[in-house]
Length: 502
Image (cartoon, rainbow, N blue to C red; front, side):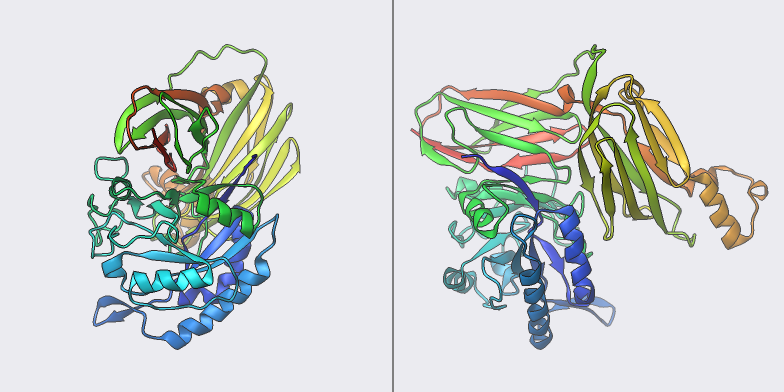
């Protein structure tokens, strides 16, 4: 059966103070994602004599907001175009049982606060819902996952990665240390500990950001292989564990056996096991690991190959908008208007990576895109990655905020380009401090305070697209396997496991 690849953020938090712009948030999700299981966050954070305190006691307000969330989730569900799910972060005894996100299949389901996970599970059996454990590798009974309380039918997918970091294990990539107060991570609650217990669940990544931005780049996304973009099809994929996790870049990953089994499957198969991996990165692929029973047993390392073609080439070129002045300058937000054009060839695809609301791109024709973006200094960078097919002699023309740059495809495959908007920085300094440029002794300030556009070196298809195979000749008994994919820019993907016995 043919499956399509869809992208979502199952741990996008909407807090009580963000309800007023929730509709703007969902409209942004329509631009950035294929589906959105919203996670309403029924907690207040308030200041108590200088101590930041979180409480869930004001249930009247939470239930009022829940009605608003439910209505919008119902209104914006558009099968085939954009799919929504109703959900919230469970506010029971999460310290003991670990944090879980509830997702319902149906609209207008209740917001419940059962204290035990057993009670929540019983409720979800009756109301067709699932509970996704997240940041599981924190200390158990301190918001990490206690695997003694787990039902794979009601938790068919588990969060591998979020803004907290990775919960894979302890001797694994990416630590779980972005929230210093909750860390460090330990093995007992980790993904690998759950797999070691014999549980079968799929892997996802998702944001857990509280900024009101679904699909926040770098916080994690979930990828789902489903028959179609509908609740029914996506739900079936959740239950079948046809999911995988990415940190930010939308790495297109397929992992399975050459006999037809796919990530998430379990089967009885006679060895040897022959696995295939297909990975299309947003940047050059660096390495692919095969993990068996939590042990690294094989790796594919991607080496640079000579680039000799004189004809057409398919490549990816990434544009990154951001940087900007220190916070003592008034100009903290910047708008970016521009266009990307290839004079001979075709733009095959555009992958956007956003960290703030209100970003827009438009396809003008097969050779040209325009954008209207905004960034905040040193905080919110935006990324556009174009997949282009063109002769290496073709010219790329980029116009942005009054600056124009033009270069050949051949040159883009060798060098990056940085455009610093120093004139804008000079104007900001003059406006705020009354200083002309020649009155500033150190001209470094103009570059340091400038917003910048980096046009990254282009990556050719032979470096961002990899197909490889692994063989396990001597497997005995029951085993599980998954792969990790590394890009050279630090972005990663983890497949859901495959469980095999003989």
